Amino acid sequence: GESTGTISLYECWRKMNYLGVPLSLSLNVVDYGPLSLYARLGTTLELNMTAKDKVFLDGELMQTNNLDTPLVTLSMDGAVGVDYNFVENLSLFGELGGSYWFTRPDYPENYRTVKPLTLSGRVGLKIAFN
Image 1 (cartoon, rainbow, N blue to C red):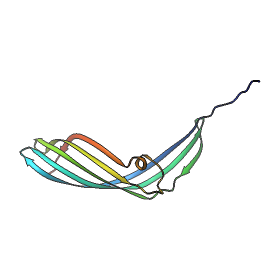
Image 2 (image 1 turned 180 degrees about the horizontal axis):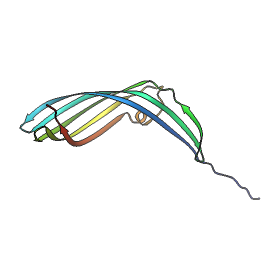
Image 3 (image 1 turned 60 degrees about the horizontal axis):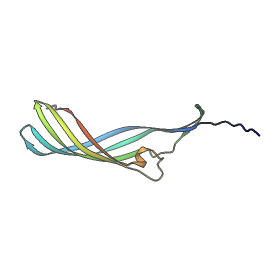
Image 4 (image 1 turned 45 degrees about the vertical axis):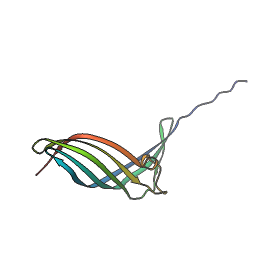
């Protein structure tokens, strides 16, 4: 006998939007002419704006579920960096840092619950407003 069947594609997309308010303090550790070494410590308070799962079957939206999430999430971050002031009020900088997102057991799984620790490196220009 011959048998036939169909294969369906089932997908679930999770979308979470936040509005974040970062606060940080920087401290110059060493100044040597135009070069300075600094440390930065901060926190970010994020308000959960929306959290939804969308379920698709063969590319067609079948269901949208609003997720029950805490209203506020919190993270801590820190970095050490080097500043080179090459023109008045303009510096080139490089820094290495990391952040940790505090999670709760009732929080829906997302990138931050799976990997709460993030390490980063940044380079760029800083403009000082004196």
